[in-house]
Length: 100
Image (cartoon, rainbow, N blue to C red; front, side, top):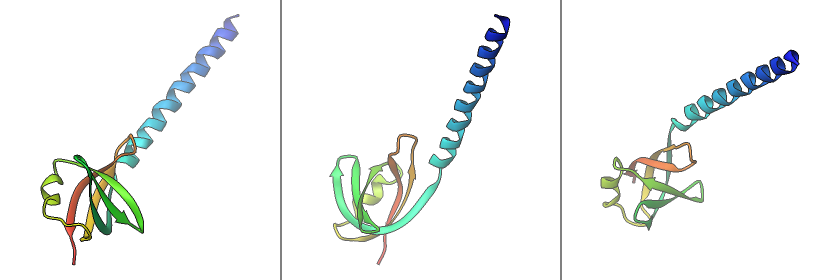
């Protein structure tokens, strides 16, 4: 009986360590700043823009850092976007600049 409880305790201890380790690896991946070039399509809604990147439409959530840069853009402008992917998979726009 003591051996069974000992084995269960050991299994639970190992399971807890594995979950913690996976979470920290995911947080590291979410902190990368990515820079891409594309074409500004326009506002998708009040807090999201769409940019065509690598011939695919991509939605970016507007952040306080990027809100001031968007008002000067027109549909079809060539842009460079800098963004981060958060833990929920959302792409957070950090910076957008018009390129010619």
